[in-house]
Length: 297
Image (cartoon, rainbow, N blue to C red; front, side, top):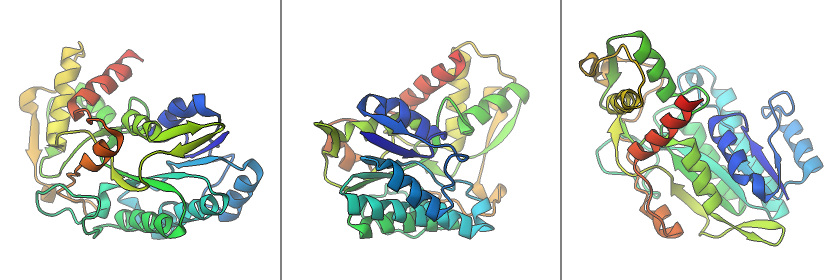
């Protein structure tokens, strides 16, 4: 069984390789081996390797840069998923795609449901939504996992940035009015694997296909996330320059960015929990595991 993982060197792609390695041959080409921005190259790769499963973890994730590079964002976030889904539909194989909380309007305080109105605030959010829609319209057997605030023990992410800044500075100002759930790449990969059943030499999706929210239980803001990172790091014996009093919360308005961020990224996860018969862990417990892995490296 050939398992094609796009974005294999990214945070989610790397964890997917670890989770799916027992199921077959992992195809996770680097950018040098496969240019995902080249549709013809992608078609040729699919024709040559004929995967039995596609896990699409590739994306244009530079949220602010997407405002000035909409075509690049559209290729990776909208056109590539649709292209992969078209192939999956023709070959009768499953496709998993990873989407985002940025497809929602970000207002109010109520957690979004999978069928909530989608009104993206940015080019990134709009192109990700177009990717979701392309997959659904393809008719391919699919799972779309919408997730939020992704981080891991490896790669560039908020947790690692905070640890670096916490060692260097004694004071930081961090946004405190964007609410969501930090989600580890490891959890995303684990849940993906739980969604499949082995049938002979094939993997098949064993939950109803469609859109699911994939995030831990609980909610916080970026200031609260940073504070918990510092608290857990201290307990683990890390020496930090930052003090608990040194982390100041500020509104989004005081930290302007080219792309508008959603203030409400809360996502209900009961649909996924009910489908799999599980309870999602808390974001704090996931942080503890990820921080331990990072600090032990």
